[in-house]
Amino acid sequence: MAGLIPFNWRNSNLTRTNTGTGFEDFYNMLDDFFSDGLMPSRNLMRDSFKLDILNNDNEYLVEAELPGIKKEEIALNTEDENLCITVTRADNDAKNDRNYIHRERRITSMSRRIRLADAKLDAIKAKLEEGVLTITIPKDVKVSSSHKIDIE
Image (cartoon, rainbow, N blue to C red; front, top):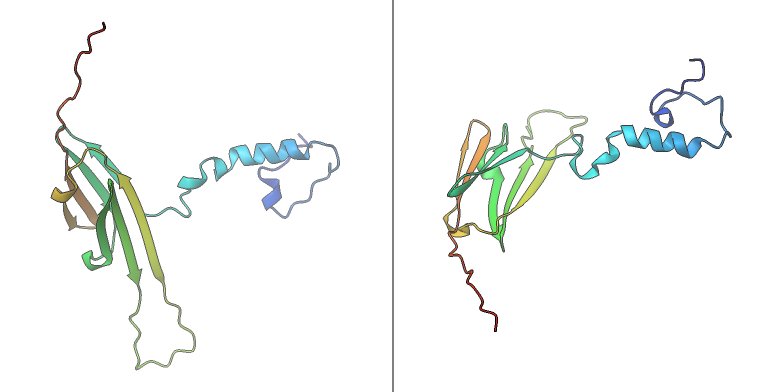
């Protein structure tokens, strides 16, 4: 057990005693396999707000967690067959009567896009209640266009 290498040794201040053995690429592969880099598009550190999408019989129900967000800071748009949810928030509560030496402001912008091929995009309803944005999207009932083809 004396030759164990700590997990994710590249990110620590520890130095390796067995460098030059030819196994560096193998150790790098192991570190990469067990790190958060498996799914770079869904990393919790840089992820935006969370969505739940339910597929009911005649509608889609989208629930987005937006705690502390006001409805004026949310923009809902449809573009082609996509529903776009954008949140833009700026902390601009500057108090001019104070004598700041240093002040930092935070501007946050998050966006999510949902593809909805069989939805009535002109009949979408949305409601913001207790930090949860609920969007109801009715489904567009499509008539089946299948028919039998006779072979000559």
